[in-house]
Image 1 (tube, rainbow, N blue to C red):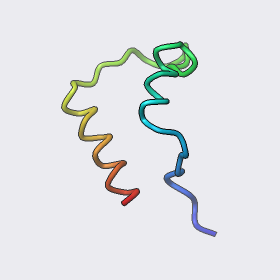
Image 2: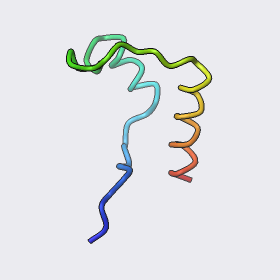
Image 3: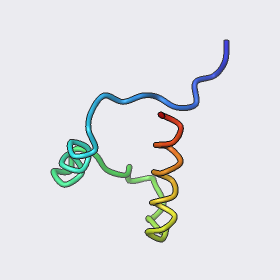
Image 4: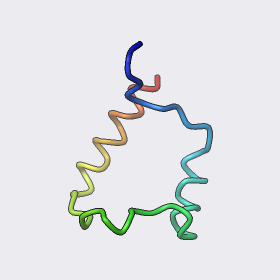
Length: 53
């Protein structure tokens, strides 16, 4: 059976941002500091979005 690489989510981006602002979603304490430039983050989200179309 093939390994699942991407998981479809059912909540909106607005809900995700809201949960991040409330502190419901965040990086775990063991994660390294966030160092990506805004353009790299945008490219990541774009590539993930393209996979769901």
